[in-house]
Image (cartoon, rainbow, N blue to C red):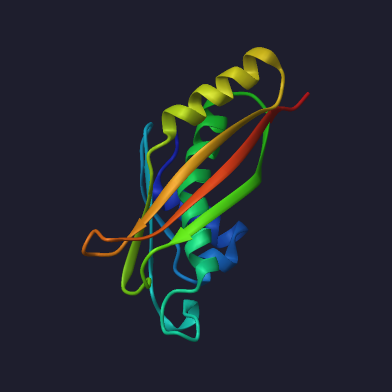
Length: 152
């Protein structure tokens, strides 16, 4: 993937997604198949129950999927719009400490973008991000329905 690195992407979040930046959401790894985003539970991102606020988890999860979407759009050399059309989440454990969100759907979004380019029609793709704590225990799972469309 050309010109996509965690440091450049984190600079992007600082400038374009300041809420994610301020709450500690950081892209850690990205490759053709997957991306990981980490966020650490702190005072600024906690809820009244002393765990990570669900919306901060959502920002981290969305970024783990969105980073792959942005990367494949950038590598396509086409002008393509992207938007989350729908999402859902499940929470299974209190999110404390460092939470890592992993999306392994790079191939799915690559194929969806290729189909959008080939057909000139909008396409949708569901992408999953799983959040785990430092013990590897799942704390949440988010699903995002991304829509992509070639702009004329």
